[in-house]
Amino acid sequence: MGLKYFLSALICLALAGCGRAEPPKEIIARVNDYQISLEQFENGFAQSPYAAREDKALARKDYLNSLISQKLILEDAQKKNIDKQKEFLASVEHFWEQSLLTVSVGMKTKEIDGSVHVPQEAIRKLYDQMIKDGVTTKTYEEIYPQISWQAAKQLETEKLNAWIESLRKGANIKVNTDLLKAGK
Image (cartoon, rainbow, N blue to C red; front, top):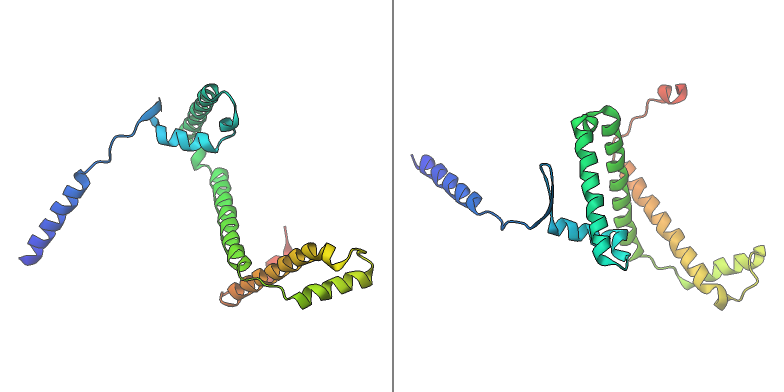
């Protein structure tokens, strides 16, 4: 019997919580069933090339017209079920994977970047090798920033590759070499 009252109370709390609506958003435009809020408009406009224009009033109007056209094209594509076609879904999946890779590698690169320190001896050794190979005639002081940057980037790449290798070691990878050889 206690469980029944508990569940009833939980449902009442949930319904009471659902009853609190967010304040209505200011709608700058409606395109059929789609609404463009002022907040969406302002955020998009600020990040668009339109924001750089001198005539802000005309730029805002042009940006809104562009948004409306985009929504109409998207709506038409959905009516034609383009969003359900295999090619489209594969394209979205590919875009998603590439975006996730870019963000993930970017985060790891930032993490690595903060931990990279190239010893002065290593930079000096690179400089001496460049002089020996005839790659530069500049003094150590003149070329130091370039060598230091290059050495840091090389170390970052090595650390990034080590991270990828650690991911490989922790994974269960099986390759069908017969299919690899066959090709299509």
